[in-house]
Length: 365
Ligand code: BGC
Image 1 (cartoon, rainbow, N blue to C red):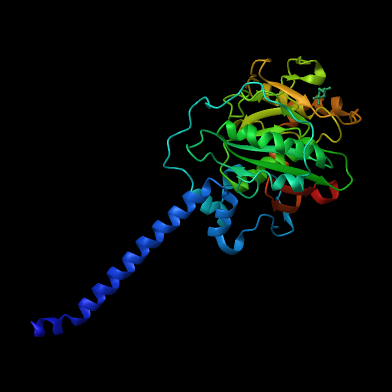
Image 2 (cartoon, rainbow, N blue to C red):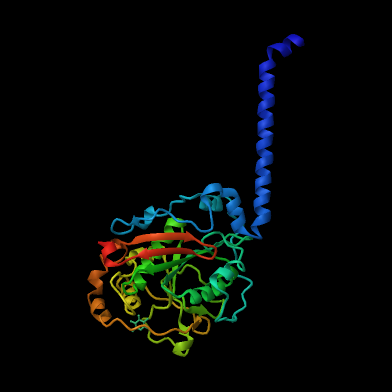
């Protein structure tokens, strides 16, 4: 017996070490999973921080200068390049059942508050988000991965009211979503359409979204049956707005709030980049949709209702009709294909991903 033990001494030791290591690994994994699940309900951002070590903070900047080299190609965009997103995918709720087709906790008409605390104060009120204003339902697997893209300049108070309203609204709808605020810096005229192209492109750098909802910051939905899901056909969402007497101003309107799935958005080459100042870019998109034989869909007007926050009206761009004229030809090149911009900063804030861009002509040449 002693002889046998002696001859197998090293094998026995090796066996013991292996068994011990395996046991430790199992225990550790179990603890990690339990910690994640227990905390997930309360504050996702803490958990993400907890698991993703040095790369994560609620607000950090990526390298300063990134310029798309003339046009964007969506297919190469989904790169889970940073740790927090990898963790979020790995530890997400993929093993749960799909959420119901119609969310069960909807109220119909909801209260719209036109005031809110400041953005900074609001950050401490809404605590169930992942960094960058990202959310997934906890108890079921969302049916739609939606990027909300908000073209923005100098409307901080509106933004706070908007975020205060939109987060609970989208969460009740059990969506897997993120809010992307695309801020135009510099002095050139506002270019809403280019900011929306950029928002779509930047959102896809972060996550595998299936669709985009392009959303003016001053529009607040009044009914939570107005589901922000990915549409089969481009969907114009702000059908009935209070300032228009809750009536659709004209049939082809695609402005305010509109949704497109990723393949349609690519198919029409995104929005035109050529509309500087107020107006026209949404009508141009409406034409692009028609050129590609797609249709604009809408929810009923008693559901797709919105309140508009008040602000001084911008001066319409007088040359918008001229730009729109050669739309069909221009749509081949002007859009995602020739999108160029300078991303000055990206911040993964608590309530949104904030992307500051310089799109002034000198930055795009
Ligand atoms: C503009 C659109 C705008 C619409 C409704 C049109 O004249 O070209 O951009 O959405 O009016 O205000």
